[in-house]
Image (spheres, rainbow, N blue to C red):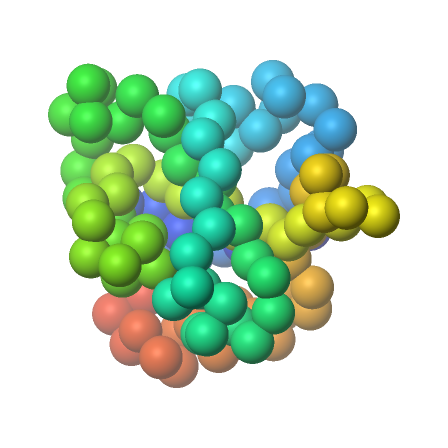
Length: 117
């Protein structure tokens, strides 16, 4: 499913991730996956959005991800992030971000330092 990836180097791209395959999600973020959902993300996107991060990013001493940190309420997020949204009857599954092209443009307008990958 198409979704958005933002690197710690402020590069943004649309990628294809199989959210039913844990190894594919690991590959997308670069390590063990941790899911994060915050009120800041809901307020920004005006819908439920989940951020996938590298669970061991701090141990690996990865670079700060500015966008991830903003979305996590200024708690440092390091490494690459992948955006998704809840799916299924109870939101227990994930799918790609809705309207990835439009969402990417919105992110690039709000965070002018983002560059396409």
